[in-house]
Length: 167
Length: 167
DNA sequence: TGGGTGACGTAATAACATTACATAATAGGC
DNA sequence: GCCTATTATGTAATGTTATTACGTCACCCA
Image 1 (tube, each protein chain N blue to C red):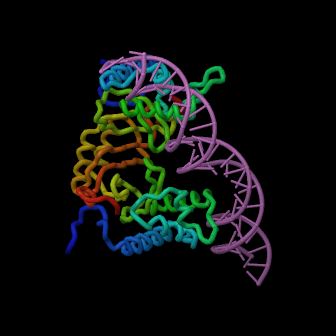
Image 2 (image 1 turned 120 degrees about the vertical axis):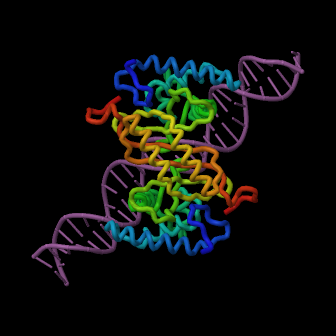
Image 3 (image 1 turned 180 degrees about the horizontal axis):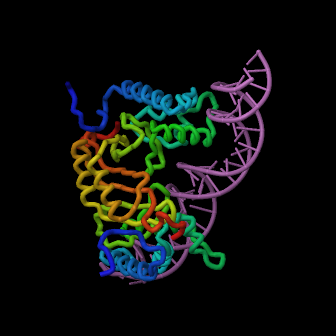
């Protein structure tokens, strides 16, 4: 019982191995459920995306995946990112043209808010049912039929306020 | 009294001239207030952004501004877009890497939701105080200090549902 | 009146993303 | 097992979005 249920940023010194293995497990399960193949390459890409809580650009991902001179073509990475996004296990940070791994258990109907810390660069998601309900109201009044909603909040995370930066 | 107060999409056949002149007036006033110079070039760029309710990419803007073979360099357009964004009279649609003119009177502290119609491509903003309050709550619980919030909702506008597309 | 500042130009390049087509791996029916 | 349809990945080229570095010009005003 050492922990609050509330969404919060990963402590700068948390056990990231646990994050990764959790995410990996959920990812495989999710793909299995959806009939999406879990290939070696997809796993590699996913692991590199999970490497930190910071979003990574497609090209940095290529860099990070490069091995003895061999590097994936952009198109390959984008294809795989598309699959992982469709599976709901990687999300795109629209405001940064970058990608991050989903570290939470939310289901297909993603209704989360994404927090982006300007200091440490990390990203987390939080459920926000109240906010989404209110947004639904606004849409209704505007006679707008929503299909997908992006909420990205820039700011400073609790881990960073009043401390030297870096995740 | 033919009209609701509620935010709604521009009718496909609305008086767009009125939108443009309203926006232009607000824009000049806003820049004056903020001590931002309103130059001929900035006005041209702004007018081309307001040309429709669809977001426009920086490069399409260059295209649209081109005159007898003369075209602005990308950097010039981006600089001007930066200024207009800082003035709060043009916004960036993050999910599309494109820009649209602010057609509403909200002040510096922008707390609006952006609706993007996938059919006609048009964009509108709506105030959503309830939603922003709820988002503030979520942030507080997550011990996150928000500096800026992006809310973009994709879907279909009332004008388009059940009709052939095009604004 | 000169010098500091801000606006804009020029050139190059970086960063992000897609199209079209080819080849390889795999699953399922037979 | 073997064929074939399908999905996954590779290769090459190109398109799109955005920035950096540096130069010139015009204007304000001390």
